[in-house]
Length: 266
Image 1 (cartoon, rainbow, N blue to C red):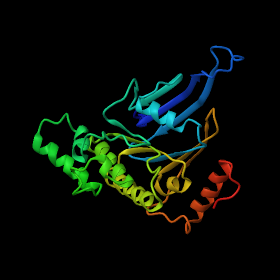
Image 2 (cartoon, rainbow, N blue to C red):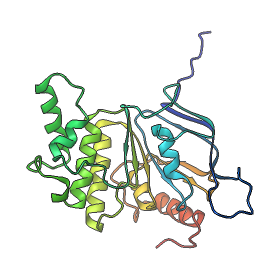
Image 3 (cartoon, rainbow, N blue to C red):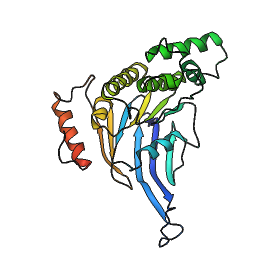
Image 4 (spheres, one colour):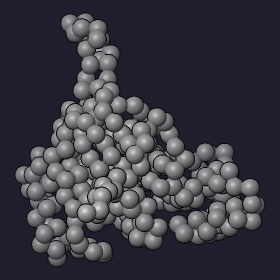
């Protein structure tokens, strides 16, 4: 009989715990008192899947993403990518922040060019920059500065910069926050379409249950702090998805609302 080889998940989170030193002025607490944020998190993310992470405000969702991205270190436990421990930010592990991360003194072109500054072939570099600007429908805005763009355009420019790097993992923290309703839906659709096209592992923190149901290959719901995994659900349905017509999605939506402390879904 041949040897069975276990394939390692792209991202493996094992027995993860995160706590912070309590710096509140309450003198009744011990000086070394710590606040536990994440507790015993065990998750695996497969290559190419989109996973949406939900949970109450302040439960540690963004902290989890920052540890996967290498911006923060666990108090205990491990974060492994392709079997290797994360010891800091990596160029193949791109984080798209909740608020605009574009450099305001640079044009759209220059911001996107930051992601490919290592390329020595000028023609290939310029082609990649333009291809990604075209992909996010910002053709004609290459030489505009961030203050000249709408909120939706800013998000598109950030996506272009992130994707130009050709990362193995795209990490997005509340990517639609602050957008008006129609722009929110448009950018959400573009993110889904880009994921279908490029098949990069994509992790998205969101407060919007409908976003998670429409976008995710898998949904993870976190508990209140100290956060643990309350639900991990694979969505075996194609796209586009209609929440009003799909009975299973509607039932899951109601379940998640209830799990997050809302007795009925609107």
